[in-house]
Image (cartoon, rainbow, N blue to C red):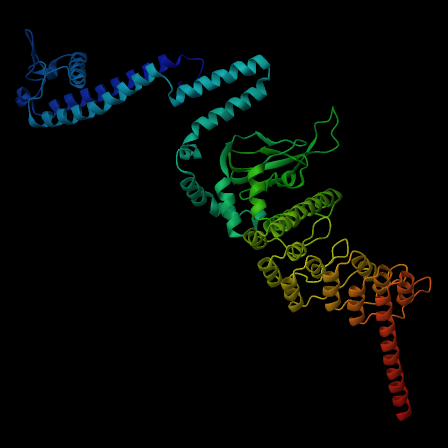
Amino acid sequence: MEKDIRINYLFTRIVKLLVVELYCTHTAACIFYYLATTLPASREGYTWIGSLKMGDYSYSQFRDIDLWKRYTTSLYFAIVTMATVGYGEIHAVNIREMIFVMIYVSFDMILGAYLLGNMTALIVKGSKTERFRDKMADLTKYMNRKKLGKQISNEIKGHVRLQYETSYTEADILQDLPISIRAKVSQKLYEPFVREVPLFKGCSLGFIKKIATRVHEEIFLPGEVIIEQGLMVDQLYFVCHGRLYFQEEIGRSEDDETEEPLPYLQMYSSFGEISILCNVPAPCTVRVCELSRLLRLDKQSFTDILEIYFSDGRTIVNNVLEGKESNLRNKLLESDMTLHIGNHECELAMKLNFAAYDGDLYRLKRLITAGADPNWTDYDGRSPLHLAASKGYEEITEFLIQQGVEINITDNFGNTPMLETIKNGHDHIASLLVKAGASLTIDNAGSCLCMAVARSDLNFLRRVLDNGINPNSKSYDLRTPLHVAAAEGLSTIACLLLDAGASVFSKDRWGNTPLDEARIGGDKKLIKLLEDAKCAQLSEFSDCFKEIRGTAKTK
């Protein structure tokens, strides 16, 4: 009756309290009378009722008195004693009655506190039942005003009543506890269950613990729809107890209500993961068969956990796809998931590169330890090693080498980590890369060297030549770096190129040699340098030719 909003709450509470009081006094009256009747008739004067005299009326030989009068007298004794209005004309006579009166009065103190507490709650308001009634009344007014219909109204009322009746099992009572304690309680309650969910098979222990701390318990009545087909879903559910089933509409028209039932969802099953992982509407409707207890995880919490344990994301996707039939629908879902994974990996690659660019070794280690691949590249094809080498971060470079990254990886512009560190003048990083097996390769090396000569970048030229780049590499005009140095009158760079083995006999597309370019420029010092180099190279060629001929004659 207390939950029925059609009956006045104050009236039902007062009736309940009166019934409790009358029941207790009735029981005490029966016990008082029983204690008196257990003594023989010859000792009636040693009982409370046998010795009782009220006015001129004596209760001696009380067994012969009318039953209703005896009951009324016993009830009067019980009520007066419970009310503790003082020592009246009725009192205990023998030891047994005294003992029971002491027990009864002690019990009356507890009963009185209960009655007073309830009366105070009626005056102050705010009890749990009253809050439920107020909420139900507000819902009823709202549903009537919006004309939601009887079916929806009954579902709403049933769900609210279920929440009220099972609220003692909810985690709301833990809300006043510190977060750390709530997390421990959630792990204790839900971790063993989450560990058995097939969706999380093969996931790391840390991931399982995080999931267990974020789930919330909910209870649903039979017939309730939890997820409706075609709507976006932002909750992931796990079945703790009960049974649910899928409903998928097939070729449904306005006049066709046919639905095809799909397999039931039993304990440890999950649903909603496809919509969350692929960001697509729910493919099926999920309806409750029997009273079910579910664990709910909101999408944002799930996404936040995957940001930390993203290697488990691939495991989850594989678990979703495992065992599915090879039909068009599942192929489309697999395609959506593959696209989602690709986008997620691009985001992780960006995070890795940001950590490497900022020199944040701790964040980089955390990302890689959590499962990120250090060989992932961003939209420009740049890996963390590219950025660490270009910025000169020795510790990060050593860490990445220890992780077994690809040393000679090339970005979309043809740059390798070795080239990046040489461009930025980090010789100590170059040494680390060489020890790890790096080799310097430059796409279109001739053009690169010619541009370096044109901007007089002596240090860059020295580094690339020391690391094995051919000084006779040619540009699209067949010009060598020595051509450019001779044309620009850069004798220092020309000397460096000659020492590295640059040839003065190379011809460009117009048939000019570096010496021709120097003569056009008119730099006498440079002309002499190139003429001396020409003589030296001719002498070297002559010696080599003689050696070859001598070897041929010997054979």
